[in-house]
Amino acid sequence: MSYPYQIKSLDQYKQVYQNSIENPDQFWASIANHFRWKKKWDKVLNWNFKKPEVQWFQGAKLNITENALDRHLQYNGHRPAIIWEPNDPDDHHRIITYKDLHFKVCQFAHVLKNNGVKKGDRVVIYMGMVPELAIAVLACARIGAVHSVIFGGFSAQSIADRLQDAQAAFIITCDGAFRGNKDIPLKSVIDDAVVQCSFVKRIIVLTRTRTPVSMIKGRDIWWEDEIKKVETMGNPDFPAEEMDAEDPLFILYTSGSTGKPKGVVHSSAGYMVYTTYSFVNVFQYEQEDIFFCTADVGWITGHSYIVYGPLCAGATTLMFEGVPTYPDAGRFWAIVDKFKVNTLYTAPTAIRSLMSFGLGPIHGHDLSSLKVLGSVGEPINEEAWHWYDEHIGKGKCPIVDTWWQTETGGIMISNMAGITPSMPAHATLPLPGIQPTLVDENGKEIEGNSVSGNLCIKFPWPSIIRTTYGDHERCRTNYFATYENQYFTGDGALRDEHGNYRITGRVDDVLNVSGHRIGTAEVENAINMHAGVVESAVVGYPHDIKGQGIYAFVIDNNLHGDENLTRQDILITVSRIIGAIAKPDKIQFVSGLPKTRSGKIMRRILRKIAEGELTNLGDTSTLLDPSVVEEIIKGRV
Ligand code: WTA
Image (cartoon, rainbow, N blue to C red; front, side, top):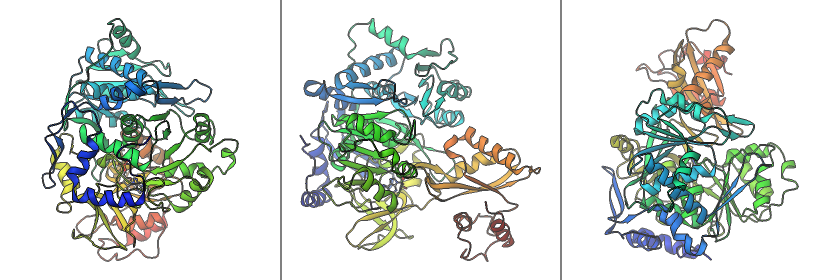
């Protein structure tokens, strides 16, 4: 069975696209009609990019979990909602039906309520990839609390910053998480984080690794004990809180070009409609398909395409606890074979990493269940695209190259599997309802085809970012002030002669390392915290597996001979301040940085040096001290 708003041919795509531009209100209302509402909207869209202010389905009332759970109970309650594959292939997998999931979410919603969580409260979730992570997320949504999931790779300091920014008094975590051969002590990281956050009232701890943890009386409680209390209450049903269409659903922190991560806020109704609509169209999901997205729920991809999109569509979503290379580099293929996965959605960095192991790890795994492959997070290079196509898809699975961002909530530019043509390394065409533009430096829209420019979107879509938590002005200046009446993505793109988009990468100071967004300013701040460091400049450089690597130029006053030791110290400092994901791949000690007379670091020059492009550094005559460039080139690492 397909979905009423699923597009089934190229002609239909063209016609629907045209209609979505000409009659956006009617277009989105016709999709929204297929969801469960407590009250329908008075007005479809109200918007003003100057403020910015965007409201979708104004006046409507709903709860997203009624769409993700209750709506499926009558006919599909017995169907698997979540298939969970543990880190260790010898451990038991779990299959959680819609009925089970509804039950568990209601139970945990009671736990939250019993512990004083109310509508609008912020709840930080810092867990490994266990089904209880999805349950915690949905239970928050059930009672109207705003969840903020933090990826398990972030440090105590990063968590403390986010707890403070969100003023979150509640935390849900695990004792530890298994990832490959590592056992990550999540609760202990949380303990370090909350030292600075006395406003934290409750920490609910799920048992996963049985790592010893400290449990502070009056503050820390076990998930399992709390569930037992609910069990004695009898009827576990938990009526879903009535939410306004525009009530915030969650905050997700992401990096920008400034030093401090931003809390991207998404709404309830618009996010629900857009993630579901994009899920069924891009992947051409059909009921009973098994959908495997390899992202972590700590990132937007996991929010939209492990949890909300698939569940609102009544799909079966596969959640994997481990890593692609454990116990060997055939793990993804073993999972595809074991559960007869139909769609695999992963990141170019994972594909490149698996490519480096050759074809051996694929042998012996039956991949014939696969129908659709997907890519997300960074531009996919042609070599990886072809390998994925040939060796995983066996030339018969369309690859969807999905371009989108934390701020867009869902996939914006992508081919639709088997419906619109795929093109290596091209995200291709916008989804109906999405109006991308390319603009030049002066903000002038570049018309026509075979052009390049900065990628903007000129009309709102339902899951557009609503604000940056606690600082609306930041949202305005970051996304809506660069170009008038446009949402600016921060990416550059080409548009070919047929209107297909090819995303070329960030044009701001944001790096994309293994598909993780990292701000150069954030890494610089962390390096500068190290005693002895006077100044630093961080740029990206091409990296075979990670896409981009981090190259740091550092002025350090305390260099006493052993540079390597200082390098290690700096790496540990960055791990402590941000997390291991932000550790520079290369650190070069320098005595000065190339600066203009007004004191601005000329990153363009550093970028070229890091890339190894030494012959054409461009104009260096405006530098305060051009000789510094020679020295930096000589000392390249
Ligand atoms: C990049 C991830 C090229 C882009 C969903 C964007 C991509 C940033 C693609 C957002 C793609 C994501 N092709 N580049 N298919 N998908 N990007 O917020 O630079 O973690 O701005 O969201 O990733 O990263 P974020």
